[in-house]
Length: 501
Image (cartoon, rainbow, N blue to C red; front, top):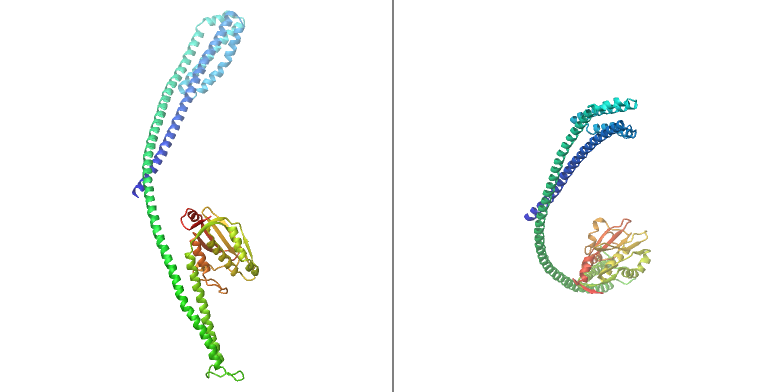
């Protein structure tokens, strides 16, 4: 018991720890993966900013190259490249400003970059406008100054500053990503190690439980063998005691019958003697009956004498019926069962044929439902069902057309054979007592000794079954014979009785 009490908490603790480890690993892994995803998003953002400012540098150089090419060659094709690149620069500047709006230092750099770009674009536009206005030398003079170079150098410085900050961000993000990767690897490694340890502990616990289970099974098998041996011994003792009781009942009924026969003989002699005595005492018919005493005439005394003899005969007949009933029960218990395959449809049809005349006289009907095939003792089943149908016919309600229904229902472990009627019914207080020997329920206006149901229940027990009664919802009673499939299977294996296919 201590081991069992210790083992169950241990198993539950291991399972709880296992779930806890898996949950912790999952939670930490999800958190680290989300952190890694956030770092990856910020890396993409920084790389995008670097690419955007690089594009701005390329665009301003294209604009400047287009301007100088036109001024040197007076070829209008250079203006096409100048105008195309110049139109994309404002949108690119706005894009960079929007991308780094959350960083104060870079926002300052972008603001300065916009200002320088504006100055550079104005300087380039002025030279183009002067040249287009016929002032070619004035435009070249502006180009010859250091203003354009200074503006380009300042643009490069601002772009370099932005790129440097973003690369610093990238370095920090890459280090953070490396830390997250290492943490994720460590968590998974620790989780795998913990799960492996738990699996090993579970294996050890399972092995121990398996050994204990095998030992327990061996102990249970030993106990079962011992129990079966004891049950066999007790069964043998009970069978011997039952046989002794049956022999005792047979002897007692035999001994009771001897004095009963003598009483019956002496009663017959007393009845003959009564006729002789009263014939001598009675005067001829012409004369008045002679009084025996002042209070009682001879004819009254003869009537009392006849009534006493009638009571004696009635009691003798009743006593003889009870003795015969005990003998019948005793002989039934001694009969060896013959287990065979039974088709209950055919069996109930045979019983119905025996009762056909009584059914017709009573104005009743017997309905037979589908019946299964079983393995049991034919005589026992036939006696039980015959007695149930006989009782149903015997106790019909007056003024109500009798209806008796014999049916069967199969369950995974039993066969339930029912006989339902719409007769008088049985008071709930008497439903258990009607199976007692010599006990009858309700109005005693039908012949019988009160042994039919007791005998039927005894037969049901002998064939591994049970007989019970319940109220019929439509009025009357439902008697149900429940037979065990397990008992039938035991008979097939030779556990008891004779198997007759």
